[in-house]
Structure formats: C-alpha cells, structure tokens
Image 1: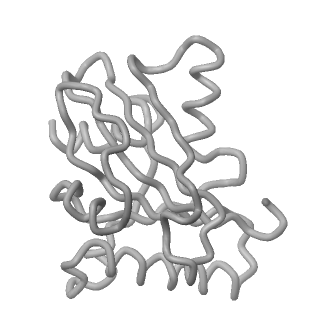
Image 2 (image 1 turned 30 degrees about the vertical axis):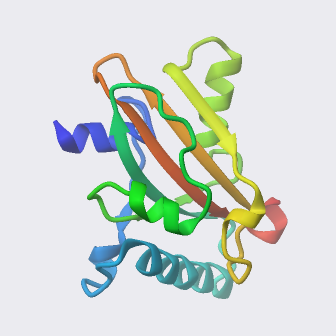
Length: 162
C-alpha cells in the first residue's frame, strides 16, 4: 500500500508516472537534496546532448499528513526537514503533460482530487546555478487514502518547449 500511496503523489490511480529514484543511479547519493540536484544536472546534460524534447523533472516527496499542510518551508534548509524517507525521483514528461498542468486542468474541469492544491514557487527558492524553468508544490488527498500527499517538482523544459 505504501508503494501505491507513493505513486498517488504524482498521478491518479489510473495515471501513475514512471520514475527513476536517484539511489538507483548512484547508491552513494544518500543525502537527498544534493544527490537529487546532481542527478537532475546529469539528466539535463543527457537530454540537451541528445536534443530530446521533453521536460526533465526532479521530484521530492515531502511528509504527508492527515490535514492539509500547505507550503511550510521557505528555503532548502527548511525543505530538507520536510522530506519523507523516499528518495527523490527523476521524471521525463512531454511538454504540456507535466503533472501540475494535469492537476490544474482537472481542478478547472471540476474533476480534481479532494483538496488539490498546486502552487508555483518563486524562482528565488531554488539555486540559481540550476537550469530550472519552473518549480511547483503539489498537495492533494485521494479518496482511497486518508493522508494529504505532498511533492515539490523542479522542472527544466527544453528551449523549444518553454
């Protein structure tokens, strides 16, 4: 069930996304934030070198709660204290198919998960050396789970997909 709940963080039961946990790339990356940022940087290099047209995304799973939490961090130090035990994950999305856009669309169509909340974070939040084009916080609760799931996404779209 925990695996199913983790999948629910970024997709519905019918629309889960494939991911690559950073500890599967390099098992020495035990510190989630620096390891995740290193994996994100490598993924961007590979994408750009091969001219792939997808959005590279790094997702950090935050602690869940039985109550809506909202954004309860102001910087990376705060964020580190909110991470859950799951390693960060890399995702590749076709432009326009990113999960925050999917959730926003479901909210607009009245078919969103209970309590869906999506918020873009200010660019000052993440390190300037990253090629991040967007950063989103997502929190929602699905009917089959009691907890609110929380994820922060760092995304880098291709130049042509901006």
